[in-house]
Image 1 (cartoon, rainbow, N blue to C red):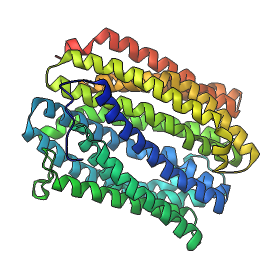
Image 2: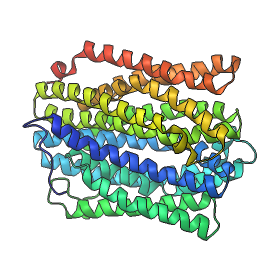
Image 3: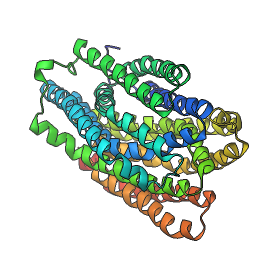
Image 4: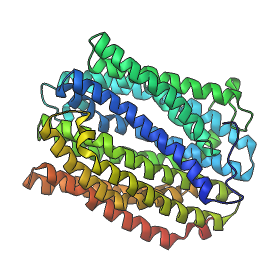
Amino acid sequence: MEKSMDMINGSLGDKIIKYAIPLAVTGVLQQLFNAADLAVVGNFSGKEAMAAVGSNAPVIGLLVNLFVGISLGSNVIIARSIGQKDNENISKAVHTSVVVALLGGVFLAVLGEVLAPEVVKMLEVPGEVYPLAIKYLRIYLAGMPVILLYNFESAIFRSCGNTKTPLFALIVSGVLNVVLNLLFVLGLGMDVDGVATATVISNLVSSAILFAALMKTKLAIKIHPRKLRVHGDVLGQILKIGIPAGVQGMIFSFANIIIQSAVNSLGTTVMAASSAAFNLEIFSYYIMNSFGQACTTFVGQNYGAGKGDRCKKSLKLCLLQSLVSTAAVSVLILLFARPLLGIFNSDPEVIAMGRIRLEYIFFAYLFSFAQEVLSGYLRGFGVSFIPAACSVIGICGVRLTWIFTVFRQMPSFTTVMQVYPLSLGITAVVILVVTLFMKPSRRFL
């Protein structure tokens, strides 16, 4: 775990896989542990509690994504500095990132506690779900400092090619999360407050493990508690890349909140089906997202080292590997969709509607993999605004327009799902054209 990966010399294909697989497994396990929350409340507290947990996902994403985007900026700046062998800038970026994570977490926790009731109202959550949704959201948001800290610490490790240490921390905390879920819900009779509390505690453990690892490492990313402060010059570099990515994520989540509101308007059964399917489809998303992040880091280091050919080769390999991996996982999930959906809720209607969602989403992923990797490629060069703008217009713009026009005329679950392949297909084409036109490896080297 102590070794960093040499991304600027030698072969690329095997290194990209070695980088992406632990990252994908981390995302998948993270979702499995989140799915455990849904499965526990769905089977032991009822579909109202299940709907309350699922309906909050877009809200949490909206609040978190700004800082997750900023952590991506940290990843790029540290990776570029590693390619340039600038240890001083690496240290500044690491310490600045940790402080930003903690301060940002406190800000979101306070903001979330104040706005929770209004946000849940905006989601048009049914009356029987409303009190549970507020209770879950408030407890979850109280854990934002440690949740963001884990994300920033993971970005620091990823920047030097280490995706195994964050995976180890997640495994430990995830197992703890499942145990606490069962203890709080089955043993103590809690419902959504039990799974939310378990999530906060497990994130505290994972962030503590990574912090300890960063203090003990002998690499340039080592944390010295006395050096924890914000370095203005480095923060500016991080924000230049991170803010557009974060704003993109926020607007993306806002569009999903509108979609969630449309889903919620169709009733509790549809809400439960959508939540269950989301917890399966996200596995494929993490696969392709891991190759997008791999492309960012490999391009970032090679750009810092002045190796443009390796940047372009990284893009080609990430596209190919992402397509094959995402398609394979998606097909497997579809083949076993009914028993997998049944884990969350045994209602035949919930299972049938959940499969409909999976079919539409996986078709959309035929476009989404290219959008993820191409966006990662551009960000590796520090070009963050352009992929953000393309995604905001192509994904969010299309989705909002669709919900406020087509869905209002034909309010059905199928109508909602049709917007996913449409929006992702348009966005993938736009980003491809922009990338070919810009030729960033020539422009920025």
